Image 1 (cartoon, rainbow, N blue to C red):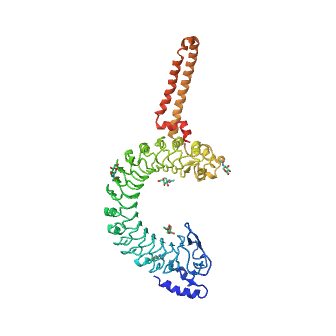
Image 2: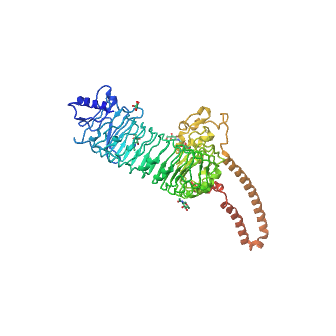
Image 3: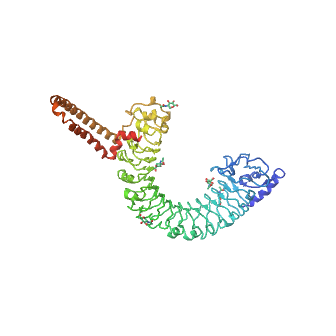
Length: 612
Ligand SMILES: *[C@@H]1O[C@H](CO)[C@@H](O)[C@H](O)[C@H]1NC(C)=O
Ligand SMILES: *[C@@H]1O[C@H](CO)[C@@H](O)[C@H](O)[C@H]1NC(C)=O
Ligand SMILES: *[C@@H]1O[C@H](CO)[C@@H](O)[C@H](O)[C@H]1NC(C)=O
Ligand SMILES: *[C@@H]1O[C@H](CO)[C@@H](O)[C@H](O)[C@H]1NC(C)=O
Ligand SMILES: *[C@@H]1O[C@H](CO)[C@@H](O)[C@H](O)[C@H]1NC(C)=O
């Protein structure tokens, strides 16, 4: 593997003879082509390798980062690194990062070269097509704590690769071509805390693979076709806190693994082939805080499946085939903050199911299910401390959504209603959520937004792409007139009429707009929405009633006045009683308001003022 490089080392000495007091560090295979060896770290040249960036990292350590578009060709043909040392005895920097753009990777081989860097604690060589780690590459670099060799071409990892790394804490080997690793591969790394091997070609794990890794806390094996995990492999890493095997083609998990890994706080087994979830599955994982099981084939969540997970904060069940969540499925989930049930086949979620998490839940996602939103309202009334609510991809029309849906959810900051069929959003709908900071109404059927809504959303981050915006005076005038206050308006794109199709709102002026869609090939498809029509009807009835009342009142007053003139003296003594009676008449309708439905409350203009 290193023969070629050794050869080049000699050439390099010849080449640099007399000019530099150099140490061979890295050699690019690309450099070999013109047979010019110009890849070295020179001890006597300028401060920082040309094309590299030298400075302090976030923690104040000296670092060198070599990553540039034209990494190799900056100096004619080759990657050329020059270093000048603070003093001549060692290379002082602690962090060395060598990387390249994804579409123009380096070609590097590494050898036993790092012992020059007495203070090196972090080494990253990525996107460099490194084919192997080498026998004694890290011999004599006990300072190294973080080694990142992700995105290379390493196909084999051997026990001797890691000799000398007695203090290494993190080893990242993701995105390579590793196919196998023998028993005890990492036994020279007794201090290792984090090992990541995701996106490799591992098909199975050798017994005692993790020998001596008793201090390991984080293990990532994701995106390897492992299919099966043998409990024996995990005997050496029983103190694991975080384990990921996402997309490992797993069908089953041996329960013994969970009992070995009972210290786990984070478990990610998403995107596997699990078909069934036993109600005792996680019995031994009492410390679990985060559990990702999205992208499997679970059809049902059985009673008390999480009864040992009193500490669980995040539960992701998205993208399964869940058609039923049993009434007590979530029993004992009294710390849950985030629940994702999106992209399943649920047609309902019982309010009782969410009772355990009523006090703690802050985020729920039910995107793309068949849940009836009018029923879901009762679930929301229980988990009413929510900050994030996602009800996207549910096909809801304006009529489907109860106006008072958010009535008790005054902590809501994020609301996702994208991918529905909304044509209108009454401003009252948002009255109960004064803290709203982000709303996604993209991919709906809006032709325009009315002025009150635009004003209401002025300080809110709004996503509204992919709506059939009708760029005419009826629909988008309020949006255009506030384009400077509500900058999100700028990005909307006209769908109608034909001559403005594709225009961004930013480029429009009111003078370009035509009249309201007549003869432009589209109809007023329920733009006002039922909610508004409904309001208008109510309004008409109310107005009619008011007129009738007024007429009656006037008649009564006139009659009364006439009567009073005649009988003033007679009634005088009864005045008090009559006043009290009249008050009663006025009090009664007010009482009615207090028992009104949530919908009616949100329509109350005074409440709206309070809310905004
Ligand atoms: C390792 O390097 C890759 C590629 O440069 C980078 O994306 C990743 O964040 C690094 N990992 C760590 C833990 O530093
Ligand atoms: C990666 O290594 C394989 C052999 O293991 C080789 O065939 C392939 O060309 C290498 N890829 C690059 C980009 O060097
Ligand atoms: C679950 O909660 C019930 C009552 O709330 C309690 O009796 C039971 O011990 C809890 N189960 C576990 C495994 O913590
Ligand atoms: C809203 O939900 C959709 C569908 O799940 C998702 O694609 C989109 O990214 C979400 N929007 C935001 C702003 O997170
Ligand atoms: C928005 O600001 C720009 C530049 O500041 C101005 O030309 C334009 O008239 C303003 N638009 C509205 C609707 O106030």
